[in-house]
Amino acid sequence: MIKTLKSRNHTLASGQEQLKFLSNGIFGDDKLPTFRKKIEALDEFPLKPASIEIFQVNVGYMCNQVCKHCHVDAGPDRKEVMSRETMEVCLDIMSKTQIHTLDLTGGAPEMNPDFRWFVEEANKAGVQEIIVRSNLTIILANPKYRDLPKFFKKNKVRVVSSLPFYQPDKTDRQRGEGVFAKSIEALQMLNAAGYGKEGSGLYLDLVYNPGGAFLPGNQLELERDFKKELKNHYDIEFNSLFTITNLPISRFLDFLVRTENYEEYMEKLVGSFNPAAVKGVMCRNTISVDYDGHMYDCDFNQMLGLKVDQKAGQHICDFDLEKLENRHIAISQHCYGCTAGAGSSCQGTVA
Figure (cartoon, rainbow, N blue to C red):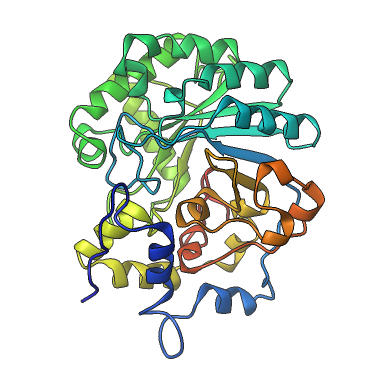
């Protein structure tokens, strides 16, 4: 049996400890093939990016929730937040490049003290698309957040919201008691502001993560079911549903180890490897930035401490688009999560 990962202040193991754990044990000769071997067989190693289109900026790990599947290990006790100075560098980079999408995430990004300033400045600067990844309940967490739907509308923000299921029990088991009811109320507030309504131009997307050690179902079928159930029971409308595979990182990795599902889950990911998904993985068109300005190939690598290729520069103060678009993408066994089945990215399936 695999030993449970040792705990520390915030995560159940540091990113580097998790990475070492993922690289050992069940992978290697005469065991499960490494991700590198899989893509070498496709002549895709080293994995390289296409043009960078998305700047995914994590403005802090602070959150009003403590979700069981969270790969960021976010929560109310996390104090890491991005400074306004770092945000200014991000905006400067976007103004000088063809990167068209600013994707704000956390934690709960809205809890960063400079969150609204960042969104407003990005909107003034003409950023083509601003995405905010909201957990929904933040809108009701404090009176100061209740105007967020109007703020999002004013700044033409695309809202991407996590909702594990369209029924209370499954959602509350994954995200905490009472979360479903608060999420429904927040969605109704967003609908009242015009979000998710046909022809409004205000996009509201939902994100589905499986509640256990299994792959998500068919995205289009789940979207159809979500739309039907949420409309019939709560009169809620939304645009698209994105299904995202849970990657074996942080709290979900600990869950897999603690419940003795780790080996079976990794075997499932490897066995479901889809060569077609390799072409569409999000690290090919995205740069992930942490609260302190360091750059990663994706936010999963961010949680594991796997910065971008050192030759390309690892901090936004050294941003060089040409070098970044010619870098080698850092990979490990967790990458199987993005290439299993129909593939997985922050924009849903990729194959």
